Length: 243
Image (tube, rainbow, N blue to C red; front, side, top):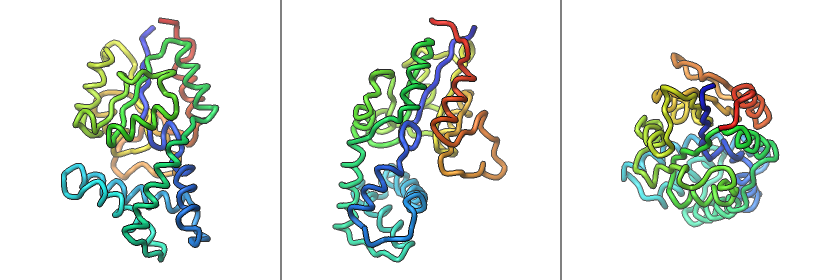
């Protein structure tokens, strides 16, 4: 039987980003009523992606990126946010992220994989220490040691660049010719396109109910929540022998 490896993104994959985001909104902008946190989060995700690319290309500083995505998001809903309040929101959001927890279902799934000898790892875009801090907060070392956690800010390569997936193969001893390598992520453009380009199999954890972009190949598996992800992983791993 072929060895199985499953690697994960962090944000909105190992945990649902709307939970800490909603806490920050409630604390900083309680006057913004009638707009679901999910809706706000989707727009922030869009502006975050745009500004992250700009910051990574040295077109803006990290602080400017934080302000940009907050101000652009809330402006869409009629709320003008000052530079000071934008940074206060970022600080509140980061504080909420320091209290991240895996769902019970996610923990069960990781235990299940570990017990069956599945190789586990992480590939995440973002600032190195910030992303590693999230992994530590969720106690990911219980299943995935830090040497099997690759963060773009540390290695200098962003998903969907195939080189970060190749680096993961090198560091973790993964061979796509002899192993089944899966990647689980929330971003179609970064996670699904990147992993598929590396020849890996893909699971799209599509919490926000997005559509596959027109003209693009659908991921191997699409799930909408942790429970569906566990079911999919169960079907993939099955009766995998212990290695």
